[in-house]
Length: 157
Image (cartoon, rainbow, N blue to C red; front, side, top):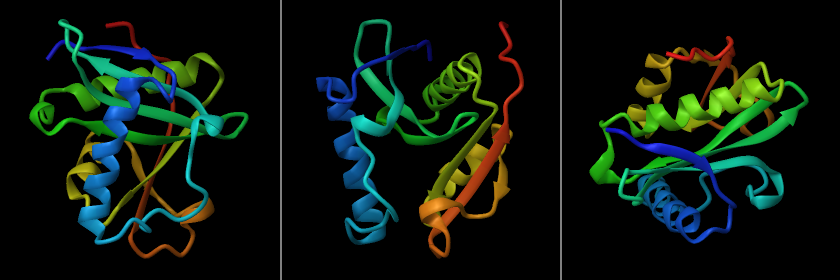
């Protein structure tokens, strides 16, 4: 599926509209709204937030980067609407975030997903992310599965 991935403000209507079902899915899957260790992320700590749109303009996915150190960022809030999963939208979002990260000097990306999200685990493994020890707020979190990747220069293919 062809999508255009562009930065949008955290509080933009489509950004908020995409994050709401993401939270609802996680809350439902984990049986509570207390499934993410640490401080809740917000516009204040997102270095970039992107929205993927179909050619006609419909927003179908999102994702963001939260800075952890000058050369390290955490991938957050990757979400694709159920009707558009398996169409390449998540891959487009991830590759866009990687390119933006590399462009500003980030060389290490890390992320956390959960034991109850096997599709996400398989996706990140397919995309070249290596399992890594839990980090930061996820230390000791038994439902956390963490990944890391050192970035190569983006390809322009």
